[in-house]
Amino acid sequence: GPYFESQQTSADFRFYIENHTRNPDDLSRKQVRIYQLYSRTTGKHVQILGKKVNANGDDGGKYALLVVETETFGSHIRIKGKESEHYICMNEKGKIVGRPDGRKQECVFVEEFLENNYTALVSAKYKGWYLGFNRKGRPKKGSRTTQRQQEVHFMKRQPKGRPDPLEEFRFTTVTKRTRRARRLKPNPKRN
Image 1 (spheres, rainbow, N blue to C red):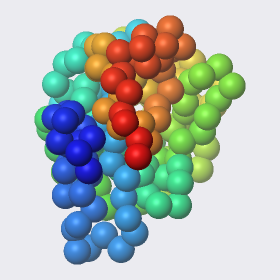
Image 2: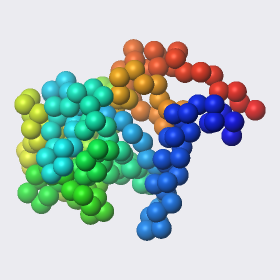
Image 3: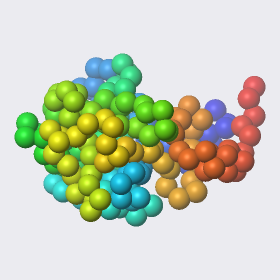
């Protein structure tokens, strides 16, 4: 509609989503969002450099921009680095690695929403093993994680001061930021 033409970023975002969902080998429709994962332990962001993944990324850094594919059935997600095009995966030893192909179950995580506005990501394949990073930003072994540890707590964030491109792609962020983002948002004219 005219709403999207008037807002270039929204138009681009919409186009990007449509492109991703047209892949013939995707039987289920995917919702694709782009955001950053802020790590509670490092105060920085998860970044995928290729095979290596750490939580030392700067706000707005290109390796910290994550393309998050959500399956239609809800909280199962795949996380890909927009720049490196590698997915975050957990192998059978509980090691976090970046892989170019994210189709394996090892690259699927389940979102668990915690009451303190944080999100934890548990392996879909290895139950009870979480994506986590220590204070130096290095990945923790899945077998050494539990949901209560701060190392596995993340917050979804848009890059510096960028308002949410589309209303329907909600993400959690600090309340202060949400309020500011909402104030910046032009009011779309709804017919």
